[in-house]
Image (spheres, rainbow, N blue to C red):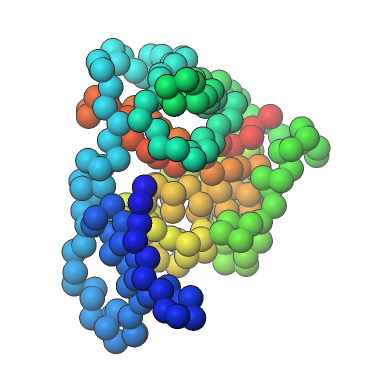
Length: 232
């Protein structure tokens, strides 16, 4: 992804253009306020730009428990992010990457929040600069959503349902979970940041994951952001 940046002699960024359609500019408050009626780039345009076509459509993708795909045309310097449920190997001699996607198994039965999590998981309970789970407003929101519910599985589902119903799906890139909670709008990563902050505030380890997902209606893959929740 290439972008063109315009900076002052002091190094202040005043404009950035990327994807030939995203144009970010530094404006005064009055000008920025009056730009509210501009429609800007559409979600359809972004989807078309980021679509990853396949040689043949996947039959019954929802029934798959494991999927391996080979992605070509990856730019140099690409650093894939992988995890247990999406493992990445590469690049090979042709610069391609192999993605193996696994379907997680989650029990619907009641569980208790453990006192000690496995090594490395505790970090996903802590607040981050863009996932402000310790914020008072974030914690009040969790209390309003859950009430006296303490079961982690049920809590994670209740928060997921609340975010899905209340956060408007718009092509707005939020800088943090608190920003999303304030505006109640955003794209996939905005939803994921807010969800992570709320679930962490409920005492459940959660992280934001970036990768690709298969969209059956488009017969192609799309870049996406979602969450992984540790339920033991």
